[in-house]
Length: 219
Image 1 (cartoon, rainbow, N blue to C red):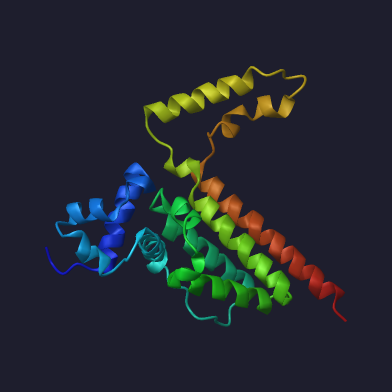
Image 2 (cartoon, rainbow, N blue to C red; image 1 turned 90 degrees about the horizontal axis):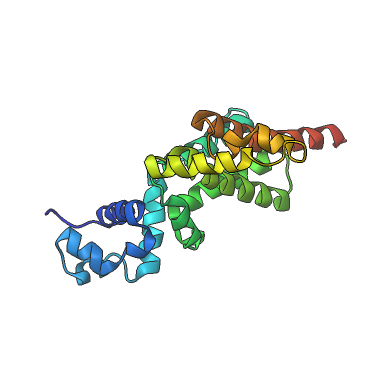
């Protein structure tokens, strides 16, 4: 094979993580699959923590947020959130990776985080409020990218959804009328496109409403 790169290692690690879970991702396993010795991998990643950070960085390295521009902050914040969701969507293990890393060790994530903080300030929020906005926004993007509506497939999964739906539908309609009415989507039968667009709209609408209130109350 050609020269072994950190990116190639991270990509193969993500493929294993997607298929078998993060527990299956080890330096020894990767070395065997890449046809090198474990020491060759240690040159790039000294341990599993560094490898996970490299995987997280590779996940969003293709999404490089541009510098702040003259567009309204609302448009830029939407682009940031949608871009992050799209970058993470391709890997089912993405959320688990981010759950296991210190995000400060992930340069690509720091760039996204920094821009989210700046857009919060541009919207008129305080330093503390901008910190919270960036946290909720980025966590929501990671959660939306991990949507079961996108990752669920196969006969076994379809059967679990069917059983759950039937279980909800057998509840008392007098006691739980709305659960019974919405048993289908509650069991996992949501339209993937609606899941994404409504989720992004919901998060951003709250931020925009708060910003409007700040503007109205300012002297």
